[in-house]
Length: 87
Image 1 (cartoon, rainbow, N blue to C red):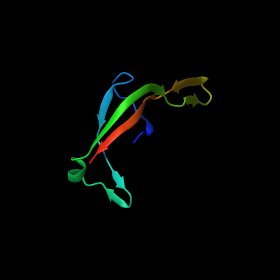
Image 2 (image 1 turned 135 degrees about the vertical axis):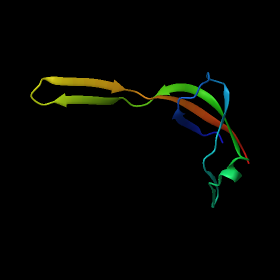
Image 3 (image 1 turned 45 degrees about the vertical axis):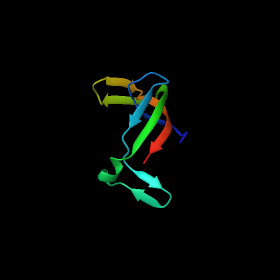
């Protein structure tokens, strides 16, 4: 608890509480990935702020035709703080 993570964009304003779906639960040496057991686990988090990923440059080029195209992309992300894990 208290970890701050970057996840794909989640709807909500900074300060909003959200609930995340667990995919894997690690408790010491035991690892749980069974869907039936994970359905009883809830992860609560708080939206800290919206963020963007690193800039990715996309170049397209065709030889001998003069065709060049440059494009960029930044993935929208959300920074969340884990507040509670209830098992």
